[in-house]
Length: 197
Image (tube, rainbow, N blue to C red):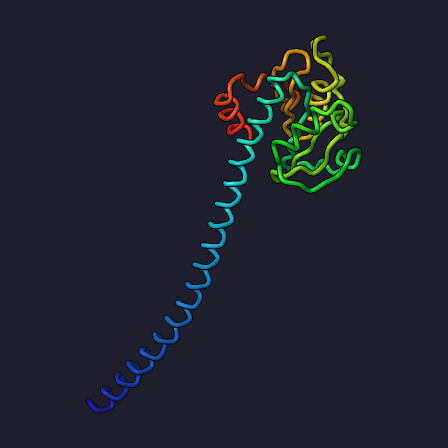
């Protein structure tokens, strides 16, 4: 009787060891896969965060530069609502957000590109010289077509529109149908942009 119990216990112990080895080898393989997925996601998030940081710094730089020269500009930042229909009204492209390029778009009065909006999606320029609907609301009489367009697009989409006034160089932004001053110094611009984008 005792021998039979020992044989059964030995048999159970042997199968427990075999099951444990199989279970842990499967778990380790899955853990390795899970760890790789986590590392990949973390790496992608770091890249996106770096793109965002670079975009904010570049946007603040170009807005300050345009402001100091009183060069009118309208830059629209796409969020969840697609702006494809408005991209089609301008010159489509797929370019990184380059300060010199953006400055040249708005500063060259001899080219038609300076009229209309520059549209950004995923921190890249998707189109220039785009036309968007202007607000139907009554606005301050000193606001021109760019401010009205900024308000208009922010009323019908969740985009954020950045405007530089050709009259006084003030930098504003429109969001949810409201127009507000973005800031006067580089530091103030960067801080406000980090909150908005």
